Amino acid sequence: MQVKVFPDKKLAARAAAEQAESVINDAIVGKGKARIIAATGASQFEFLDELTKNPGVDWSKVEMFHLDEYLNLSESHPASFRKYLRERIIEKTGIKHFHLLDGERKPTDMIAEVTAEIRKAPIDIAFVGIGENGHLAFNDPPADFETNEAYIVVELDEACRRQQLGEGWFKSLEEVPHRALSMTVKQVLKAKEIIAIVPDARKAAAVSTCLQGEISPMAPASILRTHPNTTIYLDQYSASLLRPELVEELSR
Image (cartoon, rainbow, N blue to C red):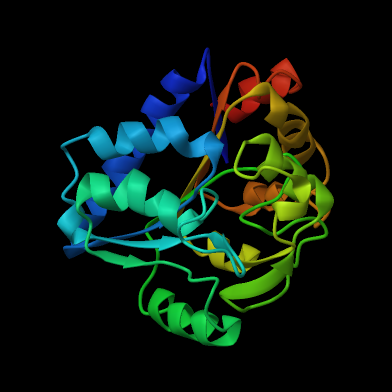
């Protein structure tokens, strides 16, 4: 694992987008196609803006999966991740080959369908974030590190639900769904490369716990430390609780 710290989140996003573009293009050159996993949420705004405005990616040769979606939430709702991906990736790039999680469908049917697709070939790169409670995708603590399923139905804890409220997606905590579809931890780790984009001071405690504490289901994103090809992009605020010597070691 490598950690890169930047003065602000725009610089971090730009560097992450450059790495992502390189991986995508290498996959296209090597096999004619790239398969990616896209994250959502407020922490990904700048990164996706940088990635999608770059003319250097042939999006017609990219296949996209995404990490998670609320159950029983309309795509027209501001918090819908389907809506997010349509507005921030699909419409901007013209990408045609994508698999959106429809939380309004029967979960077992949706899981079976997207599992069949994601298992057809390896994922070249996954874009992820780290939640304020340390979650990876919507795998809140204690996360299931053992399941071999590709997607599961999860219960969202209060810290996760409060984060969604705090980011402005909902008008009240009561509106935030309690359940969601989520890619599993093991499925995320199957990606050949992982880029985690984690800006802002509100993520500092989670970053510290996941990078400096034990690798544990109670800090789900700590599992990224076991992946041989993960890069975590931080700004000075999200990195503020990390020991300087650790940052130096992980930046090599």
